[in-house]
Image (cartoon, rainbow, N blue to C red; front, side, top):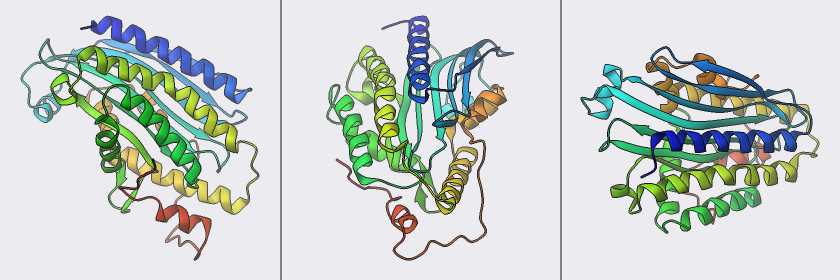
Length: 298
């Protein structure tokens, strides 16, 4: 099994690859980097891009932290050990144009000891307006990567994403889903530790290809003020999920994580319109009809 240090180093390389690709995609904005250290041990590289041609706000964060696990996390994990190590890359991109989707990716590794260690992560897409061709392309590319390791991965992880990225109080999914997995071990996955790690890296390499394609399909589309307002409302839903349900946000806050890095996922602007109702047979109504679990995109 590859060491935790080697995993962290590879994830750093993936952060570099993705930030370079996103800068090239935007053509204007550049990432600002902030190096930080965690009080309990370890640290990371926060990279944020803002006010670009396409990317209104985005972050590509790397962290490798260690230290003592808080009591509430120990109870949640059902473990007695104190010392933990966690590393990963986390990405959220909020575009300017309502026709370009929000995207999120996370790959991570967690270790308590030789016997308790696992991988987690996934990619999901949150269009402001659901384009069914884009959804089919996105899910098709994810399935290709999954199938290289196990034909069971895509259906299992797709269902996991549908259930995880669900805004219960709105009875709608955050977007069109993707794949999600957590606490993945060889016993659960049916493949080796090395293969799970390789799978996570392949997802990282897939990210710039898929998002560049989706951006370039819609980056030049014109939009109205009403469509911009709809985008801001959908961003509000995104905020609700991340602050109420997101496990990574909760873990970061409960382990004394860096607040700016944890809340990097939030957009620069979002709106909450009181009792907003979509018009019958509108693009907005169509989008809401597709924010459901269990849609087979491939």
